[in-house]
Image (cartoon, rainbow, N blue to C red; front, side, top):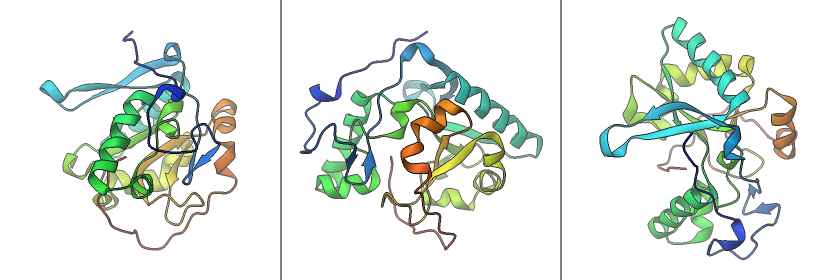
Amino acid sequence: MRQVSTVKLSTVATPVQEQNSSNLMGHLYYQEANQNDLIIIASYAQQQYQRFEYLDQEAAKALMKLIYAARDQGVWIVPVSGFRSIERQKIIFDDQIARLGSVETASKVSAPPGYSEHHTSYAVDLGDGRFPKQDITNTFVDTDAYRWLNQYAKEYGFEMSFPLNNSQGVLFEPWHWRFIGSSRAATIFSKVTDSQEVNKSEPQYYQQTK
């Protein structure tokens, strides 16, 4: 198995003042998963941009059941991003700071390193295989994949992490789903699942990556 690069949060030079607190600008602290618990769930992109995506084994098995159930109904759901190390999250977050101009603004569209659900290996970004240009954008809500997930994902233990008007104050992310269908997964996300506020109003459109 591929060795997943890791780095302790305390060694990351992130321009935030409250590292290791349980809540940072609306984002909750998560420990990085043990790489020995991860398995490959997909390959994403092609040629020099190709990367392999990983999840925890029980989350991966549930996701495979979800994906094949969707395909039986003619819907092509693809994993876009799975496990993400703290080191990788720092690169993404720093890019957002450079693009948006401040830590506070960047935190609305991306989690600081150490505070991403992707660290747990129980969260995954999903896309529609027929419309790759809509991956990690709000136009994902117009796809069959999103509509299918909204209706059936809960049957496979998945829920949207950041619905409209969520209690964490993170902007709407229709592509970002977390697995809560086991006792271990439910424990990991127990800090948010009880307080999450789901609002059924129209999506708030904006451009972001997370």
